[in-house]
Image (cartoon, rainbow, N blue to C red; front, side, top):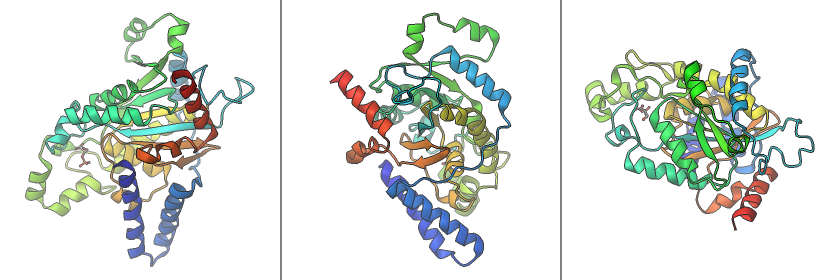
Length: 345
Ligand SMILES: O=C(O)[C@@H](CO)OP(=O)(O)O
C-alpha cells in the first residue's frame, strides 16, 4: 500500500539515523529525518533549496510550449480561485509524482534502465488505480520521461480524472512535428492538458546490467555488490549512470523546467521512474546521500506535494480511507474538489 511504503521509507530513515547519531554530520541528518517525519504528520513544510535560475533559455522554451495550450483551467483551477487578479501569480500549486506502473520487465525481474518497455497488465491496472486516487486533484501540465511506460501511466491515469480534459503530447522534436501537431480551436485548447516528454526524466541508464535478471546478477556478483549498484548514491553500475549522475540531469530539469510552472501557480504531474524520482525527492526533501539509499518507491503510487510560498510540503499519498484528508490539505484543493462534486453530482 502506498502510504505504508512511504511510512516505511521514513521509518527506515529514522532507525538508520538512530544507529549512527554520534557525529556532527549525523546530527544534521537526524534533524532532517525528524523534519521529514514531522512534516508528514503535522503538515509543517520544509524549506526549499535556493533556486538556481541558470536555465533561463529553457524556461522560455517551456513558456512558449505552454502557451500553445492553455494550462490553467479557467473554470476550476485553484490557481484562479480568490486570485482577484488573473495576472497575479499564485504562490501555491499541487505537485503529483508518480512512478510508472509495473512494466513487462519489472514483472520478469530484469534490469530495465533506458530500455523502452511497456506496462504489464498489472501495470495498466496500477496506472488506472493511480488515476482514481488523483481524480479530484487539479492537473494543469504533465511531464513524463521519454519512455513509454511513464507515458502510458500518465495517459491511463488521466482517463480517470473527473475534470475530463484531454492530455495531449506536445511534439517539438522538429519544426515539422511542431507544425503538424498544431490545432486551432481556443475552446479545444482549454479542454486540453499539455504533456511534455523529456529524456532527462528517464530511468537511470543501467549500463551493462540492462536486460539481466536481478536475482541471477546477485548470485553472480554477490548481493552486496548488486545492492551497491542499485542503491548507492555515487557508484555507477558497469558503464551506466549512478544515482548522482541521474540526479544531475533529472534535478536540473526539475529546477529549470518544472519549478517555473509551479511558481506560476500551475498544478503539475510528473510520471517518471524509480531512480529519476528518487533523485527528485532527494532534492525536494533535502535527503542526504545516505538517506536516499533507503528510499524505495512502489510502482503506480501517486505522491502529493504542495508547493507553497517557495517551499515543497510533502503530503504523502492520496490513498485509501484517508483520501478525504488530502483535500483538507489546502483550501484550494478542497475548493477544486467541491466544484467537481457540484459539476458531476
Ligand atoms: O531496472 C530498473 O530500471 C530499475 C527500476 O525498475 O531497477 P532498480 O529498482 O534496481 O533501480
